[in-house]
Image (cartoon, rainbow, N blue to C red; front, side, top):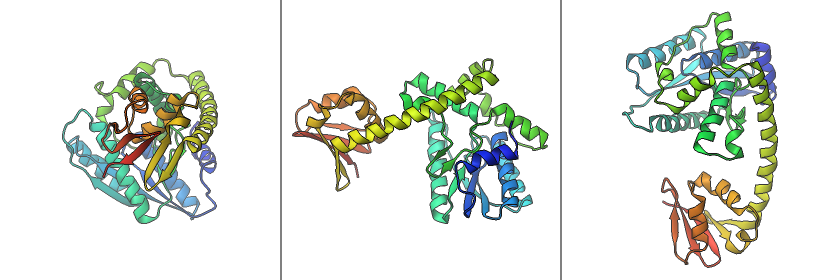
Length: 311
């Protein structure tokens, strides 16, 4: 059950509340982020070492609804004497609109964090979001990394509600008489996440949630073991100098499961087709392979591959 005590218990496992902490709360106006903000307001009143401010992105995609959402958040912040920062974007209709909006949103978050010396950005993702993400990744094709769900903490991002279900969050909001704004686009089946959410609705219950949490815990441990092993392979194969990464082809061919390592390592640079990478390894010298976003290039040279960022 979600309450302030349980929220605080989970939070203490992730960040040190004995030190001064500056936290941005990402607020969209939906029930998840409003509950998250309410819990942080309570914490900031009880603990003077916690300072919070709100971040909100307005993409102007829903006309007056977007404007009302922004004004709604402003009133909450003003009522509770919380600093707030609103960022406006003008986007046109695009099949990749969600991906574009996400990049812009997190770019703004990161800028604010470093610009003002804050420690963390708190996001309102819940357990249902994590379950949906796993199924989205499975549908698209993924590795162990893609089925371990959304993590509680990743660098400067924290998700204090990730262990609580959507129904628990809704019940907390209703019990505490909170108001929020429903995003009508959440009901649109043109988005993959919404389709999966509707399909999952009838099978999600307490035993499922309990089993999912156990599975995520085990996958997290297994992924940690695998990640450490991949770091050992990286140290064996790779050399980094002058903003370039060199891969020894001789050593690559000595490693078992090398395709898995190369995919895990190079996919973060935009190289998603392992067959193309393997073809490059055995190709003639001077051949090149460009990343999906054209930001990086892999060059085949005698006995090595060179990864370089394109200026």
